[in-house]
Length: 369
Length: 124
Image (cartoon, rainbow over all chains, first blue to last red; front, side, top):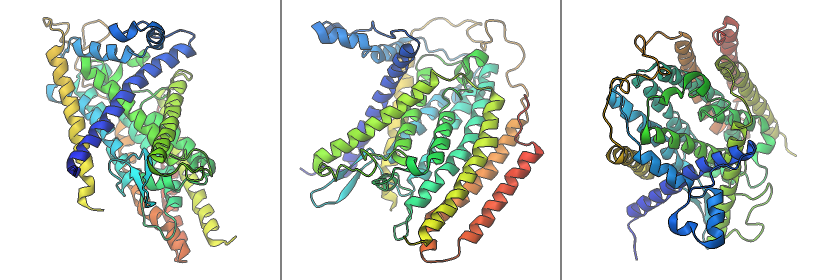
């Protein structure tokens, strides 16, 4: 049966949105669970569903893991009173949460999850849109997320929100620079002579069948990681919220699912960030450096595709765990420290890193071994 | 690479916006209702009556940061086309090292000047 390709694209998009939203809600659960383990507590372990919860052993086990907690969270968001205070600028107040969610979900289109090798030996990327401007598109769209934050802060007409909004926007644009420069060595190496110039994330992933970029560009990786924390407004950089100073920052005046959208947006950003760092530095869907599923003989067909997606998801979850781990380990920085780190340390460091790789790559390409 | 490659992007944007819209509508429809009152309608300030207007003055540093960001971001954008042809040029032994180092020097001198002027210094 012939399926209309446009309809197929809609189905893929729906699946990806569903997966990301599901991952978001379970990332929230993981956050709470990991936090409680780090602090020596048990975390959410009561929420249960009527039928599944009463299955003898498994039901108890799942309940204790808190598997049903996200459902309860969602329902609670939905049924709470949705206050739109009188003093806000209504249009932008409602638009802001949408603006913080849409870019996060849109950047997912260029993220490749794995690869599928057909019987003819053709390699098909498992990605919604394999754009050759991939990484540039990703930076462009994800930086639109700052509008959600700044509009929320401004339209709330509240001092806490306003301070949170401008702080967050200044921080996000500052770290974007170091982030952009830190990936340039990777792009430089990927665009080897004889290949078409590309910024496609899939090609970057494919280029790591040998050495992973984290191994020979460790400084780039570190700068990128720190900037990612700052970009997603995670602790130790969560100046946007910093509960002890600004109540809840830019979303102080939000309630119900409007607040929930900011929350989901933050986690979606985190998930996309983990995906990107996996593709750029951690070898994408290759199981180990110098080892691909092809060498192991599992590279072809459906099995290869499943294995590559599984590897990718595993690495992504590991970096998500890193996000959560760091959040519950490090205290928050002061705002002037955050800005100093971004402008006076990371930016010069990333430029120095780039200059070093200009010479290293020049040397590698001109000398014959 | 054609325009049709961007169709999934449009679909995704539509999906995301639709989802966000549906969620907000749903939360308005299903959310609990209660009467409004003056306290609920005023800006939150730790429980006390809100004083003055919220749009107070804020540090000029934020403007400076935004302007410096634009400068440097454009410089990063200029670097991206170069990054894509750098190894190609080396392989064909075309001169690229000199010009790009000149560009980097301009960038670094600019940054050093800003650092020295204290434009990036945040008051404590």
